[in-house]
Image (cartoon, rainbow, N blue to C red; front, side, top):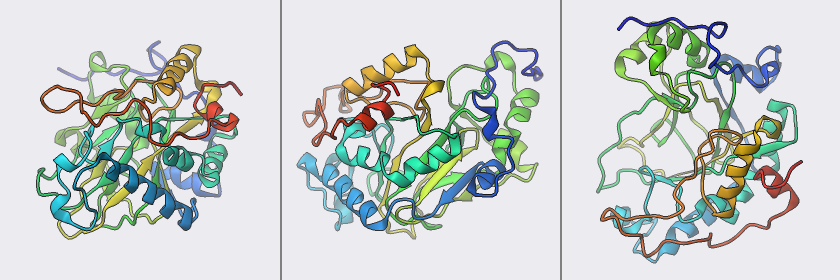
Length: 336
């Protein structure tokens, strides 16, 4: 089927950027890199000692399920010693999104300041996102292939969401971590308008690319890049930027530890989305990468492969955060 061209002027379904002002200014700081490349690494946003302390709490959480998991023994890095994962290496169930250490990371001053500067407001919402702990060279699972995607529907135009990774372990060229296609965000509209069939577009804020589609970007000089970062860094990327989480290579012995966290202005959320967000918070449920929209409840219960509920499952986090005024506002439970 021939591509059907569509433009924001002719389609009432297309949603323009809610805050276009962050696209047009000529910045003189890291925001210029985010505009140009679609991603940026902010160095030392979380002080190293605090980042290490959060990592240790994450490891304590993973070891709390009473298995034979030993971080010093690769032979124990197998599925039966790990809680159920939504994807390999990513944990969303067992109330982990609302563990105290997760909220401690989300409320780190440097992390908040970065998003406050980006969006031009202190009145932010945060996603109830996941924990990533990736063991290199696991013996029980095949190496995961690249899964290039974006986290924004083609019906949205401009910048709607900027995702974040709070880095808690070194991420070098051989280690597991984020891979991006720098500059792909700027070609997002052209790609969808000229190479895809409008009738296939959905409101789902996820789109996966096949090899032929990636070749279109590569023909325009867009190539993948492994993002390298260190403990305490903050990686930001535009949700229109093609990306995926890479597996460690066989040369890596680094256990990847990272917390995903995205923030957007509270004023961008509808009342319906805020109600859904509050429901997720009350159930200790995770959500998507999106803080203000596309609120989808994740994994309030965890099930084994045979369909039975994991006997290790939890109805609440091990360690609850203090429900401060600031936390409840970030969670969308209390208005600004």
